[in-house]
Image (cartoon, rainbow, N blue to C red; front, side):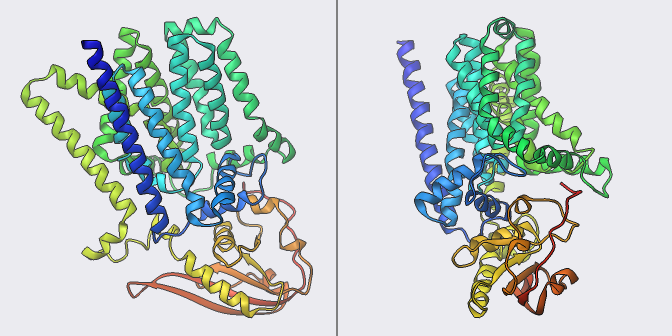
Length: 515
């Protein structure tokens, strides 16, 4: 009878989760279809990569471009086709976390609620509507850790092969995936199951599989003078005027905002308690959860004192910490008196409510305009997803007034990418290099220096600014237009647009010092 009841509960949690996943997937697709927000510059840039499929790219692995290319080949070039992969990978991640939570923590309830709560946290929820490398990466990270747990607990070769394949695919998505190797090694060194597995060939076979799947990135870098390594080192030691302390505080603050304060404290306390109990009781699931979360967060935390660290870089550290937080919550509820239980439940409710409201605001920030905050869309991060359609429409109209074979050029990869996506016909666009900016993927493709002379051009820059002398000298004549985009009777964005005639050629920069 007890066994039958457990089976019914297991099916209930699983079926309910699948319904929730499908519902969230549909809602996210609806939001993607009707959102007023344009593609972010990075999304547009990855889409432009997908038009030139390769083994890898300057700053990221190839998975993001491959996925976008797959969906746009089926559904056409539109924002929904670009972003549908984000909704899909968020659904897959949700189910993978459920599998890890229920197996590693021996609880269907923990697996179910950790997967559901993950979708309320802004760092995951908001990202589920943006097609960035984080979405496939987080799925491969989560699924790989689940396979590692199954491999260590069941000692079956198939799980090792799965872990290796998923790790390799994750590395092709985002290079942060490499951190899973020391995390898993630490788990193996500190658990009996891991020490036993180290004496078998399968962990090494898994590592070999991961390496083989990663070869497209390795091969591409061999052909391109290790540009990815140079770029990564540039990210580690970027030029900045900020002190290390200020950068570290900014990173920590970003985590409180992206996870929300109560849930951040909950996952931190949960993973710390899980570690103490795991080492004391020699519990594989608890130790694996600790080593695949705390070291990752600490890596980026300390890195944040030496250079700018984006808030989303530490996203993977919260995956296995989520079920750990629920695990400690249930332990506290079981061992506490009525007053303490009420307090813990109230804190849990408050934490989830704040997370839901924060995620809701991330999706619908314009609601704040109705209560007097009229400039909410003027600053980061919303200024990255506004005004691009308007710019594309203006350039499309201007292009129609220009001579045939007019080409489009911009001074940043962000504007260059947005123009390629939003200008009618999706023309090939070019990123002008003045020698002072960071290198990007456009520098590896034919640039304006490869175009024949005599053509006309539209040159676009952000804000009301002047054009570089070299650009003006490259044409017989140039005239400037100013595009001003308003929202709530205030300037949202401005773009300077030059109509240039009789192209005389422009020299290609000999090399880059900024990567």
